[in-house]
Image (cartoon, rainbow, N blue to C red):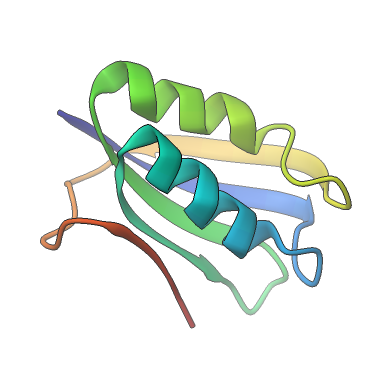
Length: 89
């Protein structure tokens, strides 16, 4: 199992990004969370099988239809304590 923290910038709030990410993450069977940040970016923690985590990261570069991604910062992280993938904040 691997875990990554993502910071996704661009037009990512108000376009359904968090709900879209929850759906994709649950489809791929990864654990973690996604939330809006005060600076207008979205932050996420994604953990699970390496291939599934990498696929979520790849999908996040495209995002939902109305999103416009300008950058994604990825860094290794500790896996979440709880199973499942959910949105916070």
